Image 1 (cartoon, rainbow, N blue to C red):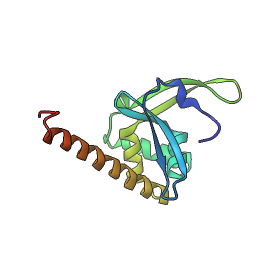
Image 2 (image 1 turned 30 degrees about the vertical axis):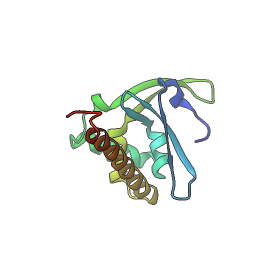
Image 3 (image 1 turned 180 degrees about the vertical axis):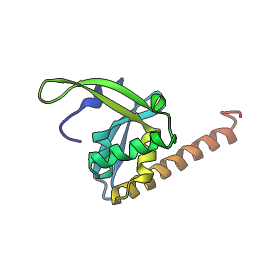
Length: 137
């Protein structure tokens, strides 16, 4: 992702990279507190939709009580390319997935496939650990 590297101001943990079918790097996100955080601008890039569309979907998610805004949002200050400081709202993985399942675009479909594959991988890993006795349920 070019330009604004604002997500580095959040405490950095493991980095997960989402790629398109062609293998092109689409977005890197930082993993923190068992979730990832993206701004509306980053979601706009991820799903190849205008920020207005992303804002509308997020508003509907909260209006329909699908998610509770206070538990899935975080404000962070960052310095933009113009040298000014701005407050940016970041949304966690719950919001990203909810928007991903609402947005209609090729990138939205690719994201849903990618997210489902990652979930299946983690379930297989967890199942393997439970089966081998490394984790007890």
